[in-house]
Length: 330
Image 1 (cartoon, rainbow, N blue to C red):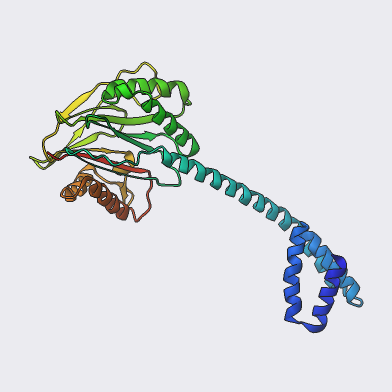
Image 2: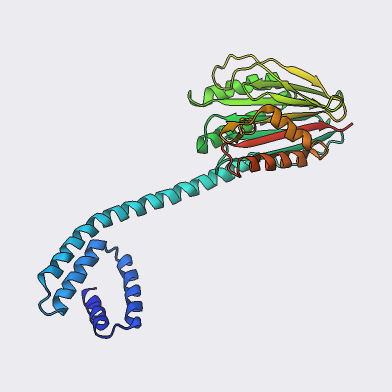
């Protein structure tokens, strides 16, 4: 390396050619391959200058001593930076895998029940979401739907969602019994998550023959019920402790009859905690936005509500957003 650098530097000092500058760029790649530190490069340059320049001044040589000390500190910081960058890339890669796994937990089939119009929109504020939603249709056209919020983010939240999904899938006989399902799910969660993690959830089932919506909640945001006859919203407030606090919790089940045109809104706190100029949006504002799009299909409604709330927040979500609407058609 010494003789190659000496020849290259001597050529440049004699000719100032651009070709030599190009050779220097190639030489830098070789130095990287040999893992030469910045201080080693400065030391190499000083040695070659001392040999090529007849009687270099003491001030020039002293300047290289100072530069050498600077490069020692720079080299350590640069290596630490590269190490942190590689670690960040590794973490990003792991998060991408977890995000894809999380996305695979969400249902993507369409609900095709003549009596029901259904739509859902869920958008994470970051790479991964703390929100989870679930829905299914049984052989009789009855529908179960849930929205949950894991108090936590990242990979632990994704693991909690995986547990929730498979716990719910293992209770098919209770998918139309919201209170019983939450009680069993709560026992699973209480046994398997850390004490500092909790899950809120609202779960409802719609009987497409009786046109009744049964629901129960584990400390989640209240559902909204829209009456087509009165063009008014009602908050469906419930009682129930968040999942995971105690394995001996009982949940109360509620029921609401739906007339043609009525719909149920399930949402996460990312909807109710949208901010305008630093202030939380009021529930009446959310109701106004939903009402504005009630003439659209359920899926178009949730899409438009999200778009409007996104604009209000200047396209910067501060929390995960999940909105689900189930409407009776006939």
